[in-house]
Image (cartoon, rainbow, N blue to C red; front, top):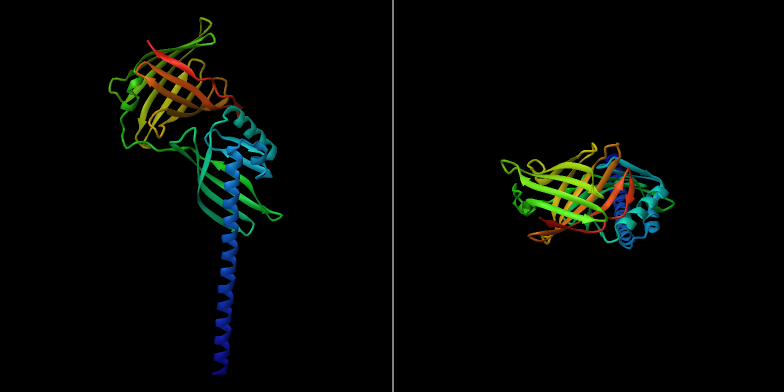
Length: 299
């Protein structure tokens, strides 16, 4: 009997110790998660101030950033700082917000955060991401971040009618460059066909075809573009929350094999005019300045 009592006390004590240990570990993880969320808030502030150095300081010296859409990788804090420097130079207006969906701990010093990023330049799309944090010398740092393909929220409709205003012949001219575009429905109205012709100083330069359609699987408007130089791209389209500007988030390859990406912003002004500009442009990972906004007129 005494043996059973002693054994019972030992079991109870062991269970109590295990429970206290579990609670202690849980408390430590909760504190670490709160710290990581606070770091995320400071990261957003540095990004929105366009402070590339401050943003890069949140990353470990050997960190890796991967963009799954373009396939590009940037390795090391310096490369990441250079990336943000170019990004901020090309797009100084876009603001970042982050929705943290989960933080899981692989060990006391390694955590993986999952969530979605939202940029004001494309308010209808969210970019799912995963971020691995490591704790080094008591400080949590970003070590691996992967951005996935944007998820675009579309209206529950398969119709292209919201883009019907594009049908017609359009021209824009700037700095010796003339772009003529003819837009028309395909026979069954499942696609909008856009044939474009670019002339520089009166000489033919590039011709191409773009098809805009509804992707029933992804439930979004998409486009596919092919040009006479052999380049091709595709884009996800979404309309701003105010139902004004359209945002076409594109990625593709030039005729000579370079990877390109951009956000084209199309803003209708009236029945015969719209504005067009390209933001967040990159070629083989090198950020380029946004293009000046041009006015496109219906003929």
